[in-house]
Each structure stands twice: as C-alpha cells, then as structure tokens.
Length: 104
Image (cartoon, rainbow, N blue to C red):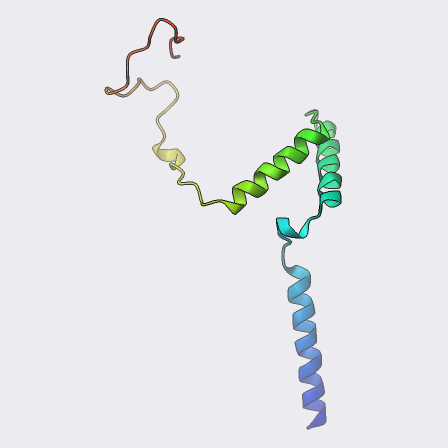
C-alpha cells in the first residue's frame, strides 16, 4: 500500500511540475528590466528583417499591448463583411468638402 501512495505523490508532483512549466506567462510576470530586454530583442529581430525599430518604440508597443489586453474586448467587424476598398461611400455619408481630399 505504501508503494501506491508513493507512486501517487510522484505522479501528482510530476503533473504539477509539467502544468506549471507549460503555462504561458502574463504581462504582470514581466518586470521593467525584462521588458527593456524584450524591447531590445524585438528591435534586433526587426532590424534583421529590414524593419528598423528603435528599442523605445518597441517598448511602447509592448506597453500598449499590455493595456489592450487589460481592457475590454474589441467588437471587430468580420473581414468578410467589410466593404471593399473601392466601394462607393454609403448613401447617408456626408458629401466631401473642399478641404477634404477626394476618396479613391
């Protein structure tokens, strides 16, 4: 009977270790120093892909993304329902003014 208890404890400990090791981290888990390092890493990867990006800009994008995730979900219009870019404006749209550039 002792062997069954030991086996259960080992299996339980292994399951907890596996689950905790596989859980994704949250933004709250990342400190300021790590966020700076992440921004530098993003900047380096982007530069290697011919998309220069200053580390300060990458850090700001990370901050904005954190704020986005903390807020309410955005009600997105499905892409299939979006009008094509060359579609005429809706009938109830205001007419363009002389100061606004023509569409198209």
